[in-house]
Length: 427
Image 1 (tube, one colour):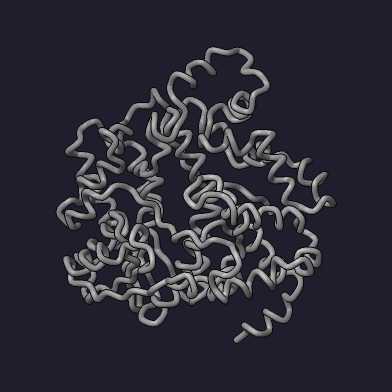
Image 2: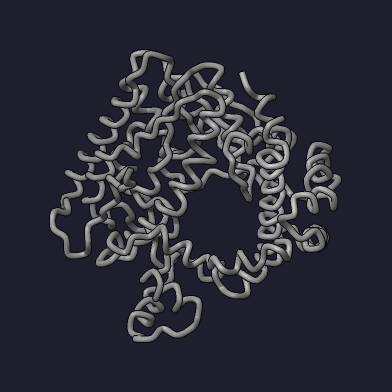
């Protein structure tokens, strides 16, 4: 057989014609295509619901479902009551009231997240650096009690440029630096120059630090010495290059290059797995994503980027097209990516976490799996206790330890005791 890609993003080049320059027509097109995508995904012989957060994407989907679905909408929300900064329950409830939806919420406190971590990893088969995937796993279980299909808001940020990295001067390299690099025939041996030479652009500003020799050495230090030579051989930049087709980036404006890279490196392999399809299928739920309808996506390619981002407001054309359907609080709210509150990987906080650390990060467990350096883990656990709780370094360190913990759990579930776990979960 032959494996062949049958579809790709195909963003227009800078000099491509066919862009819709009238804002009013763009608004009408957005509304028409989103309505059509939602109506199509309401076809079902089983109960249908929606995930509803405090963001504009899920609010638009929920409001559109309410407009076209003949039955009362059932809306499902994740609540983090222990941390007001992360809790969107009030905004979601207000939106549910506006559309007359039946509202259901699951509280995801630290203990509940810890308790569900192993089951979440069994379903998603991925490690993580934040417990937001566990929250989504619990949300899917809540939905399973009421419906068999849920419509979700994933994909809107990718289609309508919702992330901060797509805005010049905020998350991307400055135009000055890009122009300087373009003017160099030989960008040099700096990591910035290497990325530019390999990919032709910087997909995310974080990659400059992440792919630097200093950071790569720190990452390699996580691992047991027997793995270092093999890991060094497969350089991260080359792995990144494998996902990016130069035919899809050459001649495109920088923002569309970054849009393409995000879709290939974040949306497909991560967001639609750990925060999408797998936790839902783990509870026999079918998730449907109207914003990733390919007819909608293809039409939105021809809306100018300055209609998608205007005066620093992300997804501007989408917001305006559906302003009347959402609450004012959600309409005016700035982008806040879904995430769970930090859960520090330290002993003595929660009994459940202590049990996980003893089971998976003890010397015996680390040496049995043979993946990581136990000495390095101990050093990092000590550092986590002594550095300032508000520092960026502590957050990065905690993310790394969370990743190590979840890789250890993966190894236990799928390598050391796979048959036992499989038999236990079999119907």
